[in-house]
Length: 309
Image (tube, rainbow, N blue to C red; front, side, top):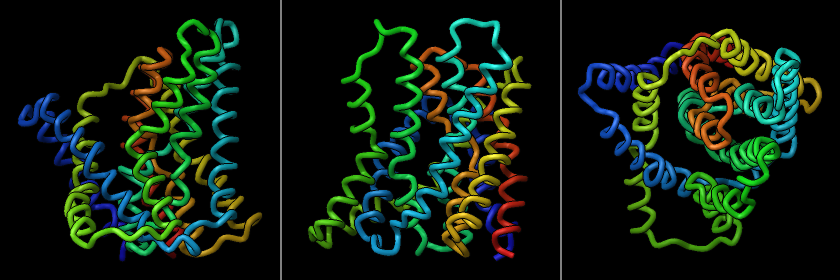
């Protein structure tokens, strides 16, 4: 399958969402409704049923996890240190630096990474995708919230943090499917059919909502920082994953492609929600979401050409 054949259907859905929203056909309230259906019902059903049916023996590989998470954590630190150095006269720095680090390292694995991988490698790699992203949001969001709230201990609530992570629909559906898979708990065929039907529009709706959300976010005056974060996210991070995965852990073929393509995905919209919660870098993160998503059309095409050659 050519790179254009993989990218075009994804772009088509995203552009459709952007176009209908920008023209006013879909209001922000209507998109919010579609978004709630997508992220609270359809995508969790998709994640749960695929994790439940995944071949875990082939999916969970320490080398793949290390190839993805080691560069992600290093890139998170690089982004935070870079921001602290550029703004060394500003106080406090810990919260803003942590959020900027998140903007350099958090990938839109569900809305962009997963559809690209399914289009390029097929449904059989879904289990490998889920094995890697199971801890993705929990790890980076927890780290950012902990660091971000250190400067304002009065507003920090550990229980709310843990509750938000544990009961996140993505984390809950992945962990639920994983547990039932490990315990080999049988599900009724009718229930599996119902969940499969509910999950069918997940990726299409997710891409539509992604495009729609881009019409709501604007590029701020701090576009230089957003561009720097986008470069780190789209170029430095996947390049690091490629080097470490291939030359240190010996990953090849589809396993290497999954790790690289997940890391090469643009900044996820949920990073903006974390920035809002910490009350730091909202404008920069929103701008990075827009810039990295637009630029990822080019960078993802390049990575697909490299990995599929």
